[in-house]
Length: 414
Image (cartoon, rainbow, N blue to C red; front, side, top):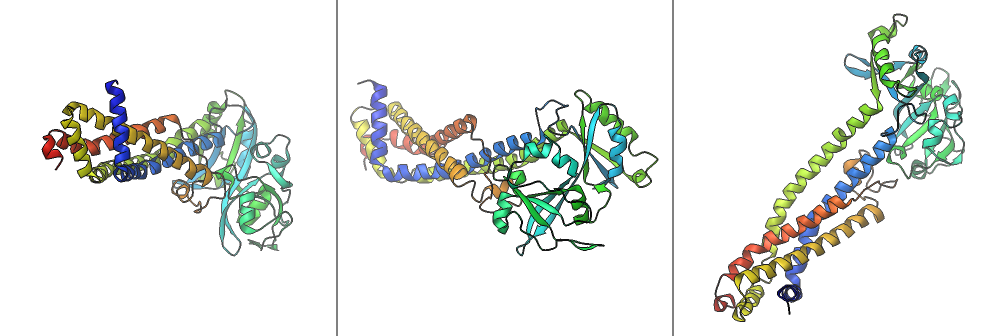
């Protein structure tokens, strides 16, 4: 029988002879690896979803997503931008169209459920092949078409509809009061929101209705500028230089803020990378604690392990052979722990849908998310988990094995 086969067989036998120590060691490693794998999987999944949402990698000039986002700053903070600034921007050479947008938070129902209200012009909502039509999918009803002064028509996400027990045709209590009196919003459609975290709490309505709800007439959160291919950077510089113009009295105190797709893409590592860095820091601490835990758990069945080593030495095994045997046992335990940890992480992310832990990475997400939590469990973190598991088990058991291996057989078998 070859030495390697002998070592592997004796290593497997040692695991079977010390089931308590092996089980406790595997559980300790799993407790360290599973949160790391789940956290990294969520970060990568959210990063990919965010890149898709902002159109990262899509060539400039494509009609699907805007190329520039124009907002306004006043005294160093973000403020609404006048809608009438869309007209001069739309006349710039290279601009295909400018779409004003309103985005704001509202609360609905007796439970005061928070939602994000998005208002877009009626013409944009019903334009063939518009951004909204391509990025959302109606599962029931139709897109809103309410005008200024009318009762707002709303399209809500399917997750929000389930939470508030709403369906097409349902009315909501008045959520705003205007000079014309209370207006009762009505649900005209439900779109699929289970596939994207950004749409799980979204409500879509017309720009005019959103302006009525927030009481901000002739103002927008930002202007979405669509440009011809190769033109966004030149148009961005022109907006910064010529807007606001002297013709708009209110705009003279506002400073424009222009964000491109590339700017949004560069912000992704800053946001998600911060949480990923904090998570990795906590993992390093858990790794250090894990070594101590393995040192303690390796004491389970230590007397039996010393007797095994004493018997091996009495039958002619050398110290280096015993250490190699222990290394093989540690590698087997490490690989088994990593495999189980990966399976548990997949169950947590896929079947349990990121229960509880998704709220750490997405603000406002409940314990049981109402949408399918995105995740990417790539080969690199899985391989790193296997390496860490082997290092943890090997580091924890190497010292106790060496102490028993360097003693005489009679001393080891006491």
